[in-house]
Image (cartoon, rainbow, N blue to C red; front, side, top):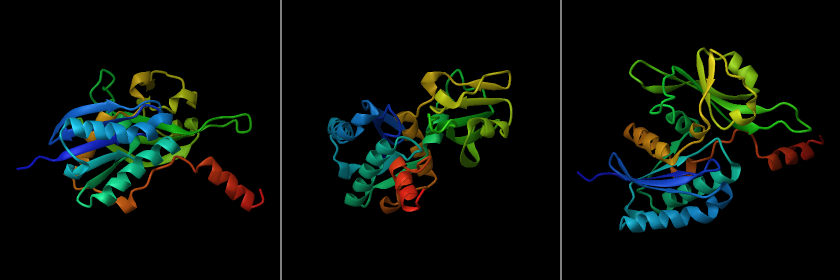
Length: 244
C-alpha cells in the first residue's frame, strides 16, 4: 500500500515553517524567517524540501495549512500557496488546520501538559492611545481521561477578563494574546511558558494527519483564512463609507 506523502505549512505567526512526512512519520522540517519574509521564503523552502526527497509537487497527496487566526499577511501568503497548489494539482487533498488547535497541541506532550481546561488566546486587538481596551480571539479546549483534546464551544473575540470570567477552573492559558492580555496567575489560573505559546509546523502536520484520517478536507476554492477581526484597512473604509 502506497503511503501518503504530505506537507504542512505554518505562516500564521511571526515564526513559520514547512514540514514533510510520509505515512505517519514526519521526515523533514524547515523553519521560515520572521513573518515579513514568509512570502519570500515559503516557495523556496518547499522546493528545497521536495528536491531533497526527490519529489515534485505533483507527487504530493495531502497538504495541511494553518488557517488562523493570525497575521493578516502571513495567513494570506500560506493560504494563497495552498489554494494555488490545490488548483494546479487537482488530486492534492487539503486540510485546513485551526491555528488555536495547533497551539493547544504544544501542551499535550510537554511538562506543562498536566491540565484539563486549556484556553488559547490569540491576538485580536491591542490597546492603543485611541482604544484603551484590548481584545483576544479565545478558544477553550478540554482533555478527557484518555488524553484526547477537544474544542469546547465556539471561539469568541472579546476582552480577556470577560472571557476568563466564564471559563471553568482550574485553567491553563496559552497563546500570543497573553502578551498584552494583562491576566495574573493564581492558584486557579496558570500560564504556559513563552516558548509554548506559538503554533509549530510539526503540530500543524500532526493535526493535519489526524483530520485527514477523519476525511475532513477542504477544496481549494473554499479554503479561506480565519481572521480574529477585520483588516484595519477594511474597517476604516467601511467607516468612511458610512460617514463615521
